[in-house]
Length: 409
Image (tube, rainbow, N blue to C red; front, side, top):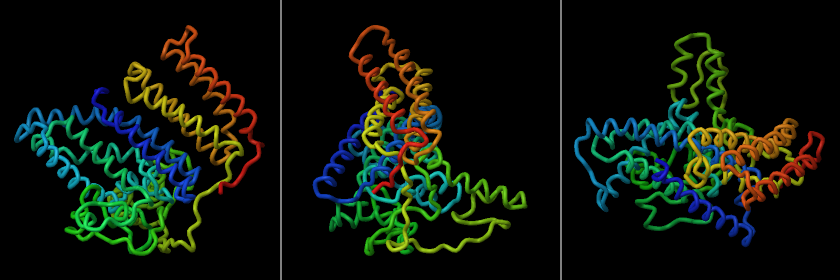
């Protein structure tokens, strides 16, 4: 399965575009990217990659069963079936995406992506753990038609990469191309909290679905990004499950059992009896207050180094690069989540971070040594010891509870 994990190949390409965009922002002095949100986006992305192996396993088992026993045709992959499969994935995803804005439980799964308050390629990486699972509940008709599960899974990755390219402020309107295909301009509208832009432009490859089904809006006024119930956190766990917690609190507050159940499947924003109604006040460029808490001083370079460490752990989990066993991949995924949760502790200057990061450094170093059997002198062992020593010293110099804080620019 690992040999066919499309995300192993797409991840380096996505990182190239991210670095390109960062370089352009530096050269042309554009403020499209803020450091804390970028790190939070990366952390969420790295952690969410750990679910792709589980999603792939589920797709191969469930879709494989449907394909083996109930398919109408046997469709081999060639140029025309590739196009048909892309169109099939895009059409189904349009509706899944639209339902993701229309139904409470599906908005809970999708909203982590929209909680970003800027627009850049790193926002595209801010995917949701639960949406990865949720999306594949809907693509099974393609297996019944005759598309092989492997091809469906790979096409979903390609489709996701197409969507990745829409998340940028650098590309303006594209003339005739915008009549048929989704562009960055269209997708900026989709992320807008401006009232005219709410719940518009769900298409990822073709924009014609939105024009056909009445959900299209053109980019006119400046887009304001974010959501109306922001998680107010850089913690990837809170980012992923914030709105589930909101819905759970509503369910606990309403007295009737029926309301506790139907709440999850009602239109997004519906509040049950017992929960006070809330007037929706439009967020504008004038009144928007972005989430920018104080962070530990001297943390930027440290977090960049830890990002590289996180990519290393992620590749160990999702690819055969380090040849880890299944148990080691599970352990590596746990270490990766601990790693990125600690990033949020640095970005929010949490008092618990000092102890947690010291423990994580030691445990991660020991695990990587054991997983890779680094018991003899080697370049990787020396690199691991060097990075761990640097991390330990830096943490104890700058990340104690009483260490200086600063507000990000």
